[in-house]
Image (tube, rainbow, N blue to C red; front, side, top):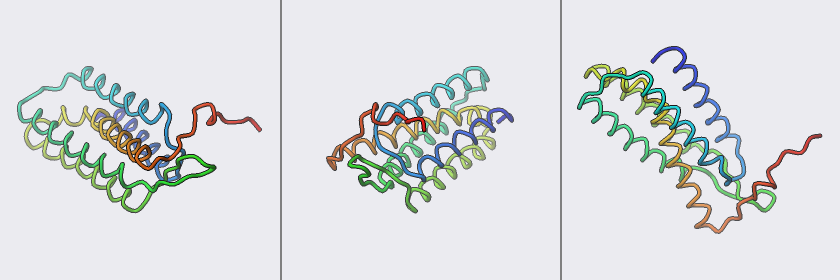
Length: 164
C-alpha cells in the first residue's frame, strides 16, 4: 500500500470509528452514501493501480469480503439502540469495539497472506473496497434493526445544523 492510500484509509477508518462511538441519530442517506463512496474509491484505486490478478488473489479477496461482510453484520447488531429526543439513536459498545478489532485483524491478515502468495498488490489496493462493503452491510443491518424495533427515524430536514 502506498503512502497516500495508507493515509486515506487511516483517515476514513478514524472518521468512521469516531462517528460510531460518539453516537448519532439513525437514518438518512449518509448511512448508505458513505459506504458507497468508499467502495467507489476502492474500485477506482484498484483500477488505477492495475495490480496483477491471480486466482489465489481473487480467492483471498473473495474470502476477505465474505469475512468482513459477516463482521459488518456483527457490528450492525453490536450498536446500542435507543431514542433521543424521540428519534432512533445509536451508540457504540464494547461488542462494537471487538467487532472492529476483528475486522481490522482480518484486513491485516489478508494482507500478510496476500503478500505470501503473490497477491499483495491486489490486497493492498483493495482496502477501501473491502471497508466500504463491510460498512454497507453494517448500515443495512442497523437499518433493519431500527425498522424491526419500530423506532422512529429522524427526517433529514430535522438534522440540519442551526447556526448559533
